[in-house]
Image (cartoon, rainbow, N blue to C red; front, side, top):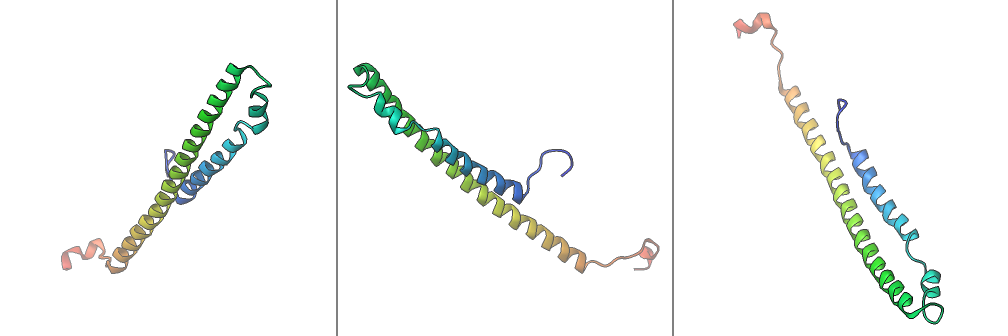
Length: 113
């Protein structure tokens, strides 16, 4: 890599793991049961209870969708990391085979062949 953007199996797999960590951290930010319970009837006004329940259902749906998305992205990145590793190995093997089957001809001997 030359000062620009680059990728390698370690960075690809690291990012895949980071996505899974983010999904886990999102769980900690979910609406807890105590907050939801304290906003229900008869502890709060009926309209407040309805809105809190609507928000809680919406938040759970969004959380579930995001976790599925992050997991899918993580899986795609892990697949990409594996493909990257295989492609690198194939190129290295091809290059090694080319070098092994090549013969060096010095420039002074070019006209004698």
